[in-house]
Image 1 (cartoon, rainbow, N blue to C red):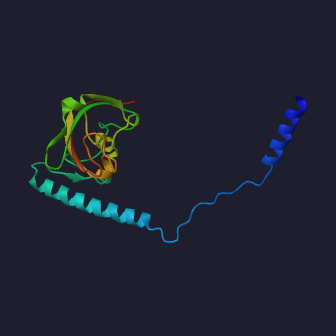
Image 2 (image 1 turned 30 degrees about the horizontal axis):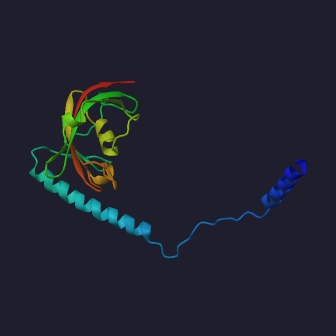
Length: 175
């Protein structure tokens, strides 16, 4: 029995010492996937900006463009009263499409309580929450890349869909 185990061990060592196959990365000579993807993103953003421009012209609200690329109906001037990363925030929001049709209502979503930076939110909503004071509200126009991106929310919001979010911030507690 001992000789069998020793023999199997030696055979295993013999095969383990063989040359390892190095797997090199695949290189495509004319791979223009990234270039096509960037072009598609630019065209999509240009189309969404046209929709937002039409929406802003019809709206009674005045919008300010943020450095992140979304539009907000307040001044977007940061003050000490606004939430920052790590602050507790209580808020409500509802989501609409560009035809102003409700996708998710305040009641469907329900009151939200969270610590900024510790919850999974679309990037645009997360950034907008930092631009609204307590007991204030704002409407934001989110391009798809700041909303739910190329996958949508897997429920009611399709891929590459720009959205309108109406937000009410109730309370902010500094960390």
